[in-house]
Length: 615
Image (cartoon, rainbow, N blue to C red):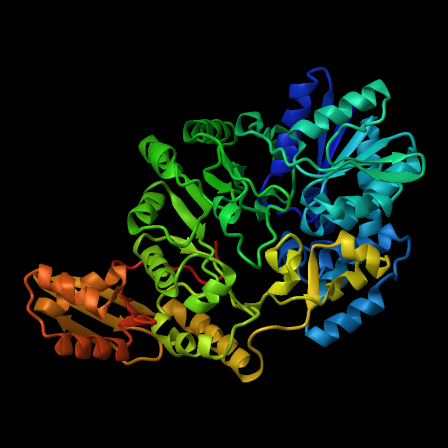
């Protein structure tokens, strides 16, 4: 059997497709005699635009439309006119949507005229290989580009078998994709390691795939959806990806000089925190929440192989959360290797300073710690299992260990009030030297999240997000099964409280680059150099118990706990004096207050900071 695997726009240009890399191995492992080819559509699209537009549309524009506009559906819209055989389809709707929300659509409008010719070229390239099966992987805004190409392939060669899979196909989404698009023969819902070999066996034998869990297939003119299994793929059965064809495509690509490629690896699937305390707003992992992780030794062996094969030192892990065992059996191996790796990792925000230090020593330059808020009550509404004080400590320790920290400040949770934000917003100017969030964002309802599955949590009324009106030509009841994002009645803060939060975050982002709040030891004294935006330059000297107190507060303490620690150190400090000093330090912006807990804000050392967007 000849198998052609396809990832369409808008897969990130700087990353190989983990899905294609895994599927390549899955097919060849199950059927060594099969021929497997790949089409890296995002790379082809960037090449196509660069050439056909005479250099006006560049790879960076693909990021603007395909990643930055993910909550506006612009990437899917670019190809919807091809899917529906109407170049003008959805144009008026998009203009109306953009005008109402202040969304820039110029780049998407400039790209759309090239979409039909691109799909035509992709179909020609795929069919030239004379495949028996074409398999698409679809995540986020890859649905419409994939459907457009699938439709064209079946138009030209009706006997071809077309299969879709990926995150966009999980649960009811996969069945809706299947029953609304008759040119799609099969949709794999859930993980592929067991399902794809079973499907290929049925296709070879010419039998109905009634026993393939989760699979959608046509029984005559009826779309059938097999029950999804709760069985998850064991780590031992998750292959190491093969990026050989991606590398060849990248090496031959004229856009190679425009991108900084990175490798993608997978150490774990699912979320160990979500298994017990599913964050209320999070829809990630879908039907496969169960946490599984490869042994650290195996993960390191895979990275070692990929780095040597591709000569790339930037490694992105797709794990939703780091396996805590990796602090014992994986990261020490990375440190011992002596390699100058640059790791990108998602972690939980309550890591200890020692764990963050180990990440830094292992070469982790970028982490996503899921901070989400600095207010403890809002964090409780999220079921994050962490406090605002701990999140501030994490931001500070990222500075101490030169870790770039990406995070979003989320709001709009049912039950929150302005009181939950007032004290935090008041303190944001004191945090200006720490890494700011990407912005303050109102949450959107995600399929599979507790907010979605349990309307009693506050979002009883929901409808498919408005952006899908300019993406799909489908009735709302079908969209309700097909899509991932939903609009609801706004919850939580609004009006003046919302404006105050968003303006404070914008000011934080604007003032961060030139702000510093640094510790320095001077014998037994402790100096704090304050060079934060919005404050006059100052240097504070702390001696005796005050220096000791400030060091103890790096871990976050209440005043009574701090008093006990100082007493254990031999410092006899009257409680009223300690309380007055803590309040003075807080008033000076040297401490963050979370309820009755205080956290020291100065950092050790001064990481190199690049302008926003550099690198």
